[in-house]
Length: 101
Image (cartoon, rainbow, N blue to C red; front, side, top):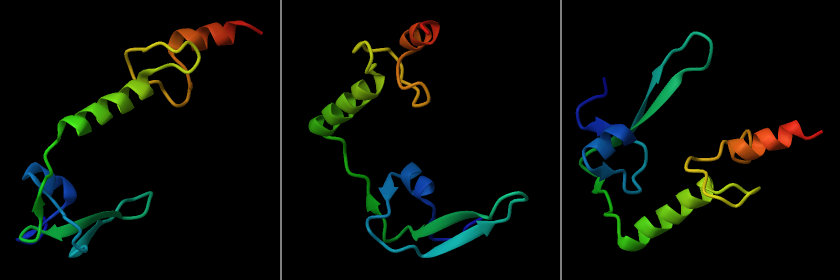
């Protein structure tokens, strides 16, 4: 629904592009019933830059960050899934913690 030559961040990403520091060119507002309007910021496609490639160091940093999100602070083991922030620990540690008074 955006005018020709404009795209959202997701649309740019699907094209292999990024905004590249440019200012927002336009915005669209879609009304909603119970909350405020949904806003979509639009960027110019002709000023967008290509997405930066992932380097080996960036892949490594991403892997370490994901490992930290999967590591239980209670038992220090890799849970195999991202620890829910509502629990703050892996499910086995949470059930053990809840059973003890």
